[in-house]
Image (cartoon, rainbow, N blue to C red; front, top):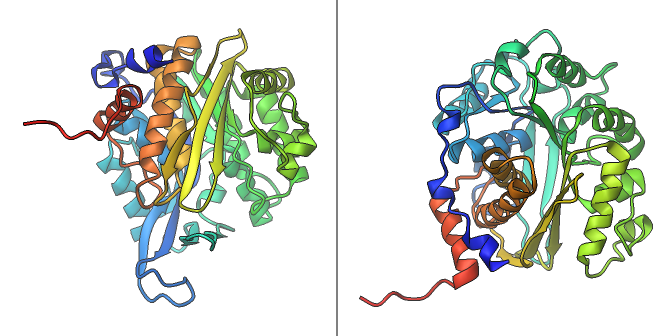
Length: 385
């Protein structure tokens, strides 16, 4: 495992194959304005709020763009200062915004009221996403053929498809947009999805009805947790039954358990690659993290060890891991080599991100490379002068 960590130097990756072309990574979804008390008061008491951007797909696009992968983010936002803020932050981080859809300025942008917890008080979040501009991104609004012209990986999340149900619409606008995009993606472009079930958006039955055809018909790379697959599809994880997983009655996971889970996902949905993120929350401030991925041909890689994180803000942590994992696939291949690289880069990237406040991954290649090296050689030693 140490050799696996040491053989990658992402600061020296040759990205010349991406130069002169359109975005290789394209994603769409919703970005919210996050309201976090800036004075450590509770949301009901604060009079000073820090505004930041929060959104699964946006976070992922930013992480990849900062690592040198040409990336595009597509959404629908109101033509007002919040929409401009989103566009400007994207551009600051190198994300293509050419295909953002602008809604009337009076339409709402999604909001997220978030209270940072401290042990034993849990963090709390309240969605205000119903009827948002992004929830009405429909077919016919995006020039998908142009947007996906050079795309190698097209991504979205289960959160995106839950917005219509959450808003009580008669039909799923974002699903229609996704199906239109699929019709225009180029040959060889794979489809990735982070399952990301959110009970605050829809119930299990509603989510299953929408997500099952998407997974079975379109998704090549699925990122998920064992809890979501147990809850929605009754999938076991080796020695642990779906009921045990849902009830939280689960102990140490052997490699064979994780492999059995991945094989069950492949069989259920005909995916090419499945990635699993595993978080162990010991307290609000102290978590442990690991991940694994397997392809349908039998390639498998799991984190060399479960690593501790002293949290500052966990939000965006999973999405940042996704960015690191996709970086591995896009630079080393959608195969066993890319899986290994993606797991290692994703683990280091998310561990750094979760020590930062707010959702967005202001993370650099140099610090990720340094952490990967320190995991093998040790770190934190004073250098003699």
